[in-house]
Length: 152
Image (tube, rainbow, N blue to C red):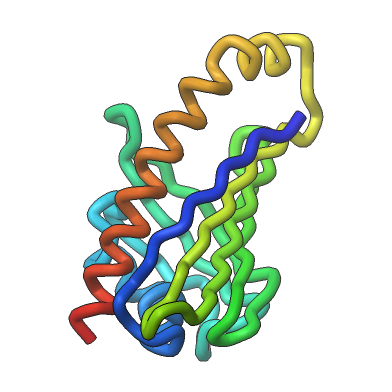
């Protein structure tokens, strides 16, 4: 039972500048207003295996989720995973040079790992609302990534 959405933002900056912003995990709390805090769990540069805890407030609730990079191909794409509350989350950033700037596409998916009858009913009833709220938050993230990359 998977729910996914995809958004694209054109950014007036090179893919390298956009990559610098999306791969700066320690600085993401100052770039993205939706992130309250970041705690790095691994050392070294951004790449496969990089791990951190990210705290966000959504719908008035603060949640901390451990995240990790499963794929990195700078400055073209990266995939980040998280497991939370029985769901497997995947965020994929794809960067494509266009018109002197970069199209940044974010594809987000949520897959219920072991769906129960209750989770199936909940996803049917609230899945569209949840995805709508997620799209709004992701759209804001993309706009803030664009603003940061364009200021570099």
